[in-house]
Image 1 (cartoon, rainbow, N blue to C red):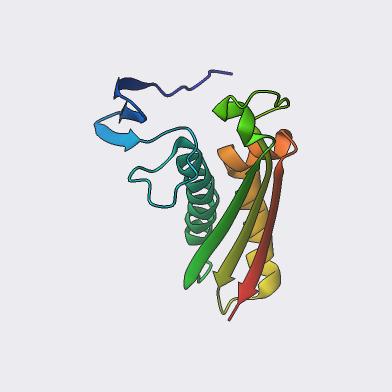
Image 2: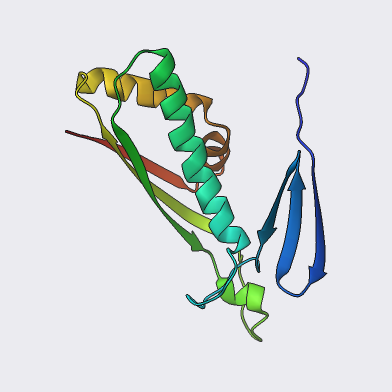
Length: 149
């Protein structure tokens, strides 16, 4: 099987900001994690959580369209926890893993179609979702979907 890959270029020309170039797009990424709600940049962790939500919702919407499923609205709430964020900060005496230890995704789908059909399309979409599959394999992802009318 042939492999397909994607390349990006990134450079850090200032403290706590990395500029990422993907294809013809450029975006800024703030610090890996940040605790200040007033921080002006989107952190790398927030981009990762947003990317997971975009992957799950985008996979579902795309498949729902192909299956002619009538979907009015799809929304996701993503919560991520780190094993020990103090390790990232370099706090003396801390140990453990600063990586993502738990991800919870709660999705809401508004559709008048048969709920069993919505769930079947949802399940298939999750099987096709690259980021969801990656986090599921790591054992850190809990994902739930609720159909609302």
